[in-house]
View 1 (spheres, rainbow, N blue to C red):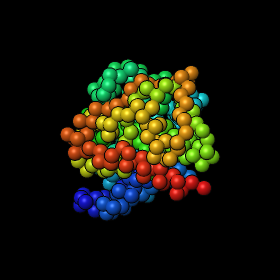
View 2 (cartoon, helix red, strand yellow):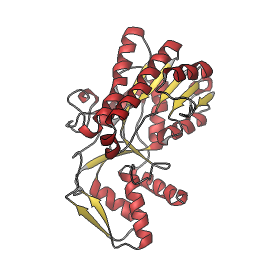
View 3 (cartoon, one colour):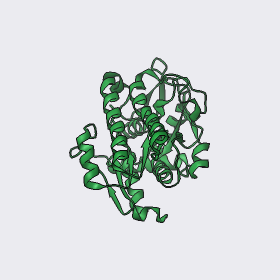
View 4 (cartoon, rainbow, N blue to C red):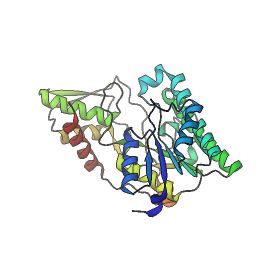
Length: 313
């Protein structure tokens, strides 16, 4: 553990969320002087007067900004304006007010959705501006990407110390298992567990299983944010991932095996595959602040499945 945190009063926006809750746990384990989690019922981060009140009441040394309006493809397609406005206003005003209030440092979370739709694999940070994001996520991805522009502009003009991380898709305990809005790993876990319990002879899966994805265990991601907060002092964006790529077919078969579902997996090639490949170049994170993932993928899946089985109603 580092003594860096012993004198740090830290705000974690989104600290009650999936990644945020693990960041809060990690800060407490590192004996941070004070960890503050503003709730949206008390502080609407889209309202600059609420941001000013928050900073005046708490006077943080460091802010880790994880709060975001997020959702699946359906939600992004139905509410592109809302996703753009809420994420942009939360982030841009918070950075500006933190700079004005003299907050020592900010750690900003971007999104893999900020990358262009057609990006060479592995995704390198230098490719961020070489095209337009995938259309369904573009308003969200671009709103978050503006925090990178702001971070670099404020460092250039004011010398303000903020850093911008690009985490890959996360998974782990406490994830969102709502089938209307969950991502692929929790959705497959829920589907396989329920099919096993019902004795279903098969489950259906979208596409043909050929796309590949990269996933990072949520505790590893939390560790990356703390390492960047302590050791990284540049506004160059940094990918945060595992560098482990797996096909959706192999992922589905692995989750079926680990959940004990023994039925057939039926692929529906009439449903969309999505982006063919998604994998990050993670060398900058290792060089800049010593982060590499540590939780093997199957071990992380086992922990996630165990949490889901124990926590569901």
